[in-house]
Amino acid sequence: MMHFRLLLAILLLSSSVSMAQNRAASTPGIPDPCLDDKGNAYMDRQAQEFLARVNATLKKYPPKPSPQTERQSSLLLLDAVLHDKYAAYRRPVQDFFHERIAKTLLEIENTKVEQGAMIWKLYNMGFIIRTKTVTLAFDLVDGKSALADSFALSQNVLSRLIRQCDVLFVSHYHRDHADEAIAKQFIDNGKPVVAPPQIWAGKPIHQTITHLKRQADTLQELALKNGQKLKIVLYPGHQMQQIENNVPLVYTPEGLSFSHMGDQINEGPFMIDYEWIDHVAKNHKVDVLIPPSWTNEIFRIVKGFKPALVIPGHENELGHPVDDRVPFWGDSEFLQLTYPELKASSFKTLNMTWGETFHYVRPTTPSK
Image (cartoon, rainbow, N blue to C red):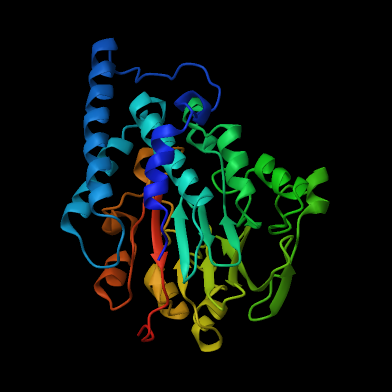
């Protein structure tokens, strides 16, 4: 067990880092043009009230695989706030995001792991995972993909997050997954960035990126600046047919394994990736799988990996159109997803939102 909660409380009270330092420099947000000033002011007050309740409930009911009615209701309330087209421009939403990431940053800076892994969710598909020996970052971005500069995280926050990590995995080139400035800062600090060849092709940074073989079930080794080594299988995934999407299965020195899927999806006649997806568990023991919540065959994917725990990501990406900001309630019938089948199965599934933490310890009995 970790003993950071008391220290965290002290740091939160005494920290001199203001909200102005946590948010990126920006111009004023754009209000909803369909509303007058009074209407926009009301929407801001409502968001502030709802998000205060969301914060309180999520604090009382942190993530865990077993159902929590109060927590689920709070996530649905969060869906409602974030499905305002102009949510990213509203100050209560920005403050909610910045405050939660600031708290997470302090946790990361003051957490040592003795058993299992600490998993932090940042924005969209951004995750940081720490074991006793290594700290992994996946699809770490600043939040500018939400299209509101004042929503994005500041350079101060990003630099502190990067200092805590040993390696960055970038799944594909979309702006809500790949951030060139963040990747450059990792590289400038001697920390590897693993990404597919398509990302930043033709730019100077491209030659400094680590391009592992995109080859199913080929175990590769990656040396880290801290002297540790990772074993990695880099599955050759895709977002549809044209976009290379790395799906790394990362083994830490402790033997724990984590797979982050970015925007992995095959559709229609292009289903080539299921040639390896359907067989991952035959060759590897997967502790935690992080798929995008909206991928159409999520249940089939999970059955192929057979992880001990599933943590879906990509909910409420504010740069997407309202109907494509996949909510925690799923919208599975409209989107034609197999998410309901997954939730009804015996696989353990955990929902997390911005700035939440989960302590993963490998179960003593294998998942079914």
